[in-house]
Amino acid sequence: MARLAIKLTPGASADRIDGWDVDADGRSVLKVRVRARPVEGEANAALILLLSKSLGVSRSSVSVARGGQSRLKMIEIEGVDDEALRARLTGM
Image (cartoon, rainbow, N blue to C red; front, side):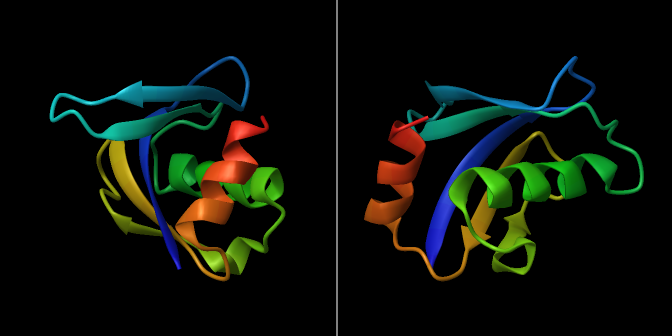
């Protein structure tokens, strides 16, 4: 299982992955934008859909482990290790 730190921006003009950034604690985070608004979990659902399509895994393999109500989230991806995850994201 791979874990991925995400900085989510809801209400964007398009769903997209903007690349890597560093948070206030010096950790790498993946910047992601989704069109969905942060209402009733819509932004989290859009994030899961975008990541599953981008990584080539099923939606059920992607889950929000921490930060469901926050812009900073920890995502878990089943069936992929950290190295494979980084390799897939670097190619985007």
